[in-house]
Image (cartoon, rainbow, N blue to C red; front, top):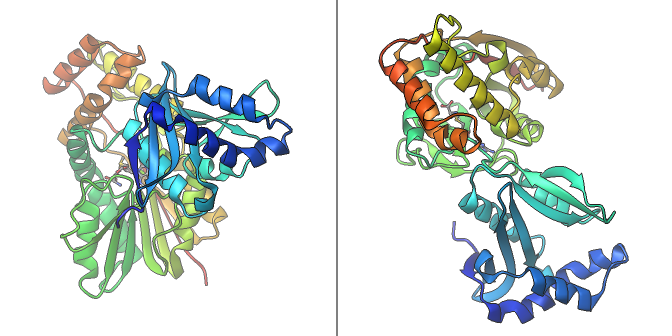
Length: 406
Ligand SMILES: C[S@@+](CC[C@H](N)C(=O)[O-])C[C@H]1O[C@@H](n2cnc3c(N)ncnc32)[C@H](O)[C@@H]1O
């Protein structure tokens, strides 16, 4: 799909028209709260305008808006986010902001100020922003979105190794569930947050040419559109479902990372045909929080401490560490019938080691940046792992399934 908009770096020469645009975009909200003052609006813009932090949004070669990202040590502030009011309602603002957030994503949360009651809040909510605190001016509120958004970022080199290890560990159990649910030739399937290719490939082979498999993810870099399934970049927490009438909708280790996971679950249920099956598989780290349940010495203690630190990072980004156990209830509350669940728990093995290594490598910089672990500790842990000193377990994986009535 060709984007209808582009971004270019802003310059100081853009300031005059941006002041006018800010006035046009903000005036109705500011008037509503009794704070409209043209001079003040201009002055505040000039005080805060840093062209190096700012992009100009262009549509058909015409400058129509702006967005800035101001880095602070504890957050990245989204500022000067204005769009020509004539272009509101076309999805451009949401697309631009999603793009800018993806480009700047790191461990820090995104943060912004919105006037209470503003229509813009809905757009921000769709992108995962939630209320953080009220401004003491009584009019503004501050919203936050998890920065890493998704802590285990697919773009990093270790993602491939992680997907490989996840497939080795959990595909056999997932495929047993598909079999039990009756997945067969001709089925239409939506694989949500597919990550790597193993699950959509298996489904494509099972449903055959008469069926259809759609694999979606916020990062589709690891999927192969030529491999018998369709690939679509899609945010399950922020966008409407990419189709309906599916016989099977499946997500594994996805919902727990989605800030608006209730909306995501509802979207997945709504995409099923009556009688269609939903299979959701999520870890429940708090059911078994240790890396080495057999904590027999210092190597195991270090492994368990690093696992604890990893969970601290995940929890700080809004990951629900006891989500797996809630799935049967959530599926029933979403209107499904014949709900049941089980759990699969690899206790140790080469694939557990590979998953542990790939995960630790992937989050190493964030663990050290947060002061939770030193490079020396992480290296020592990886050496222990390679030396075969550790029986590393994974978190139990809860699989829950149900049927859309009708
Ligand atoms: C832990 S991986 C699991 C991948 C795969 N389902 C598996 O089990 O091997 C989580 C996946 O969810 C994707 N993801 C995270 N947030 C998402 C969102 N809001 N919408 C769609 N996919 C998302 C990530 O990009 C990543 O590929």
